[in-house]
Length: 403
Image 1 (tube, rainbow, N blue to C red):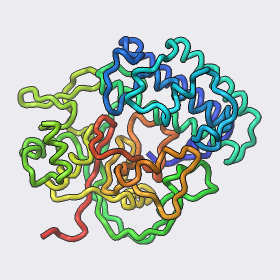
Image 2: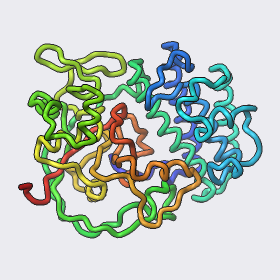
Image 3: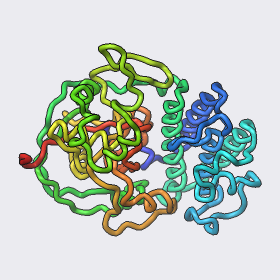
Image 4: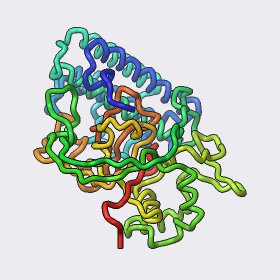
């Protein structure tokens, strides 16, 4: 994957109208997968980290667009929006800052039909308002923000389908495959401009401010670690050998009692894996997925390698080197999620700031990420133990030989 002119970050009003409709059609197709299994509403959905009741998730997506576009909110603070929600209790139901995760199972939400009607009405009004907007970054910012939010929540809904073992839409069932032979690529390093700058379209607050950063020479894998490579680690007792695990990783492993990645199952001499409720033979050439930071770190320790820093990853992704390809899976990096110098929260105040210093940076995209969303400078961030996402990793050589 590479950044392109079709990115939502620079989309015109006409392009945004098409993308917003496309995103909503996909969101509704994901919701219908839950509904087909009778798991669209809270009572039958287990309370799991990384999973929201699908009906709440659907309403939240529409509410977010109404909040920032139709109600002209300048931030996520309640006093900074105009008027009232189209649903009488919409703010009480769908404002994620007012409704903690555990409370989303106890809300007296409208019916599925009622929430869908709300979604359609919000989108119709958004598209109508968009026709009267100037084609400027400032005027189109809330539309691009709402589109980014829906794309991110759509991928989260796909995670939930995988977590719950439910079927997924046909367009989401493409598999991430290694398309070229593994190799290691050397990069000379140097001074780079890390992060994004204002004035070039939509920018997430945690990407600012762009600043000079020195990257030492490094060598990085051109491909992600494959299932076959990771299986060697598992078969060599990787999950049983404490020396490969950090203290935090060992504590997580003890709580999980895990001996292989999530969704792997041993079947005689081979491994099988669960994909959206279907058991299939694990493809050795496919990048390993559904591993968390601790598992990625442990593999690196076993292999005598290390994870790349996010600066190294960004350097490689923007280098234009033909061997470095990305976009199959979100990739764990060695970098804690921290603010860049001069950070200021954007209108969506709770997006980045609450997660600094407790989350870890992932870079790239996954097969489930819309192509318009992929960007080499995008910083995804998750708690280290999260493994329900479509995440993998690649490794780097140590700068100097370890003693």
